[in-house]
Length: 242
Image (tube, rainbow, N blue to C red; front, side, top):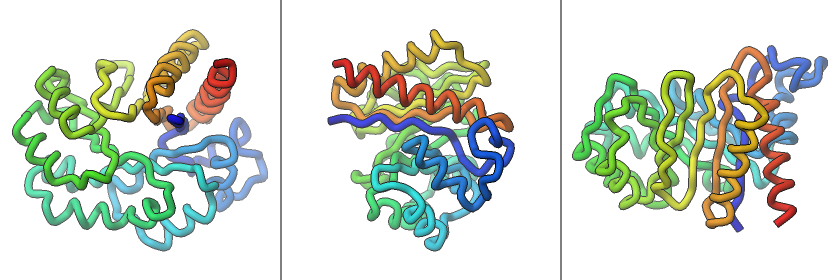
């Protein structure tokens, strides 16, 4: 049975009180509370620093068995080396999330490329060859030159997901390239109609047997977390009526 994971990009936001977090909740208890409401989170701190084992163990202890941490790939890979000559750093980075993987709590690794990085199919294929098969991976392309059949075919060949990212300025084509799907909803507001459309699309994926991960934008307001809770609940109702 395919599973749906819905959350936000990050959780450590005191400004989410009292809309999402209870007013008197200590910040050290944010993650356990978050994990009682949502079943996944996209980790951003791994973009700038390697995950410490003590941190990973703490996260494992504070979340239920079914919870998933999706991991943003380190900037050394995506922004500094720009997918080139990563043979040494990539395994080092992946080794830091091994504790989460062993606990069954790791979701996909998201490789978010810089907006000024244009499509290069050979570079992408060379990089795809270096990623271990057992690691779930999604790519967020932020230059529209990547939205091409040649790139989509490469992702399909290696079973890597195209991250469907939605911002006010750019929307990624909703193309399925892997046996799971990955969405990033970045707009500050979503109407009830837009959220219903999200749920319908998620339901299509689940029916087809594809696990689906979806993350709302982290903001100074708790709106993204509130949207995520709403979408997760609506999706559960839809599944229950099948």
